[in-house]
Every structure is written in C-alpha cells, then in structure tokens.
Image (tube, rainbow, N blue to C red):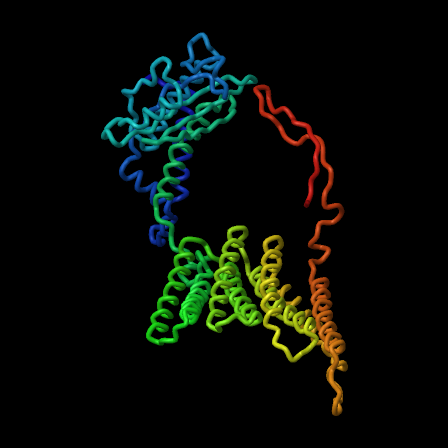
Length: 501
C-alpha cells in the first residue's frame, strides 16, 4: 500500500480525534453512577465492535464523479491529470486507513477492478464474494470512490458502497473544497458503512409491543362488522329455513327443527367466511342486513295484499324478496364501502317507504279501515331501493339522517293534528266520514311528513364555512408540467378547468 501524503495524515488525525472525543463524551462521569440501558443501535454497534465488522474492499479512486460518464468513461486518474491525480491518491489512502480504524479487515489483495469493469453490477458481484479472512458465504463490503474537479478549487466527491451480499448501492455525493477532500471522504465512508449497518440491525429486531397495546388499546381491527353480520346472517338463515319448510306445505316439527338448525348454521358460517375474506365494516353489515330484512318484509306484505293462495306460499315470497334484497345489497357493497351514515340512510328509507306506501294505499282506497298490505310492501321496496341508490352517490352522517327522520316524524304529527278535525268529530247516528275527508286527513299527514323532512334536510346542510367559496370550477392556464431533457427541464404549457365538478 502506498504511503499517504501530509493531507491524508491530517485527515486521519482529525478522524481519530473526533472518535476519541465522542468516546470520552459518552463515558460515565463517575464510576459509581449506574449505567443507563443501552439503546438498540448502541447494542448493535457494541456487538459489531466485539466481533469485528467483517472485511472490506476499497477500490482505487476513479474519475469522473458526475452523473453523466458517457463522454469520459470511468478510469483511474493519470499523472497528466494534475487536477485530480494527487487528490485521488490522498482520498484512496485515507479511506484505506479509515476502514481499518473503524474495525474492518482490509482486503489488501484486491487491487480493484480490471480495465472496463467499473459498472455498478461489478460492485454487486464483488460484494457477494468472500473477503479477507471470510468464508465463501460471508461476502464483503465494497467501496468505490470517485472524484472530479469542479472548478474554483473545489471537487465533486461521490462515494458508492455495497454491503456484503447486498443488491442495492448506497451513494453519497458532496461538493467540497480541495483541502477537505480527504476529511470529507472519511466522514462519507463512516456514514455509509456504519449508519446503514446499524439501521439493518434495528430492522432485523422484532418490533416492541406498544404501550397502548399492552394496556388493551389497539388499532382498528379487520372486519369490525363481523358480529353484526354473523347475528343477522344466522337469523336470516333461520328465516329462510322456516319459510322454505312452510312453503313446502309441511308442518312436521321433526323436519322443522333440523331445518332451523341447518339454516342458522349455514347463515352463520357464510357470514363468518365473508367477514374473513373481505374487510366488512359495521356500515357494510347493517346495509346488508337492512337490504335482506326490508326486502323480505316487502315480499310478505305484497303477497298478503295480492291474496296469494295457499297461505303458505306467502312465505316463499318473503324468502324470495329477502334473497333479492341481499343480492342488491352485495352489489351495492361492490360499488362503495358503506359507513354508519349510509346504513342509517338505507334502513330509514325502508321504514319511511313502508309508512308513505301504506298511507298512499289508504288514500287510494279512501278509508282507514283497510289493511294497506300492498302499498306498504311496494313502498318499503321503493324506499329501500331509492335510499340505497342515493347512498351510492352521496356521503352523509348518521346524525343528519336521524335529524331528518325526526323532522319527518314531527311533520307527520303536525299534519295529522291539522287534519284531525276531518275524521275525529262528534259522530251522531247515521253520520259517517266521507272518502274526501279521509283523503284530506291522509294528504295532510303525508304533506306534513315530506315538509318536515325537507325542512330538517335544509337546516342540517353543511355550513357555508365547509363549502368552497366562489366559483366551484375555474379556468387555469400556463405551465402545467415539465419534461426532463438532457439540457434540463422544459416547461409544458396548456389550459383547462380546475375545481369541483
């Protein structure tokens, strides 16, 4: 190994002095003071120092060090290149001495790459081979320094390092003054081979248990709606089994109870499998449950209104409606992830559809004495379908939906109170409530429901501070991007519209 110059010796003295000062600062002030527990990084460093850091290969310093080496290929500086020849010699000698000071075993038998073997892949291949005093499977550190004269008595220094058997390159680039080339090269080498080694040691250690987890406070779990889905799935499975048994015309309990057990178990198993396969939120579970139950109820109501015979066939209508609603709910979940607001909206739509559909049926009949099965069934189905479609294209909170429901309920009470004189009066012998009076009462109740819900919807809308001020869509023009070229970035000009559509 060639003798280092005076500048390199000064750099090594500075490095040794800085290491000594750091060791003195980290030493305990008194022998009787208790030692603090070592950090994982310190423990990894101490372990490396106790057993040695392994072997390292310092390849000869090359030039140039810029990003584009196509014009001038990488090569060892020649004596005629006076601007970089001496600095390259100093940097190479400093790195070789510094590597040994850091605890590495320098492989002096490696003279560096042969002519033409200066690519990055050559460093990776050399790092996979054994170094001095190492087995064939150990690999070795490979460090290649590059230097280039940058003018104004400054140099561009690039340091490339590959860890043993590594597949990635660690690169540091700095522009330094001529007098600081060796000193900065020593610091760059230390940062590359020590900091990366400690980071790898920390990454290989298992992550400690968080304090919040130790106290029982954990983050969000997968499929938080598993319990809701499982409970409703088990109940719906039992309903399907009961409806199927009744629709078959059998009333034998010896067949009913095994079918109930089978249906409950099937619904529970399918729900748990779905929760395991997909991340089911609480909103997803309640949307699916509401779609199934409101559709099943609508099927039974419509069958009753149509007077389906025999009576046992009406259970089949409920089972068919429930399965159809479940299919629509699954389709909705494939289009959007539902939250609690969407679930409240879907179930609220089914309930108010049932109410308004029943009122419409009674209005059509002109009497309050009939049972509005048909209107209630169609209304529940329409309300469920409309609310589910609305939930796909909007985002709302459950509190706002409940406030709108409250407003609609209060409006219905107010409308009923306003129209009550039409039907609640002193009825003498022979006096009856006319069809027009009944329809007037139902119209006032329905109008109050819609008006109360509309007022609540208006007053619960987002405040003006939550909305974008000014125009929602504004024109834009000018530089909209840049295209990188060899000579730098070239701006791209254009025009368009920007905002919320």
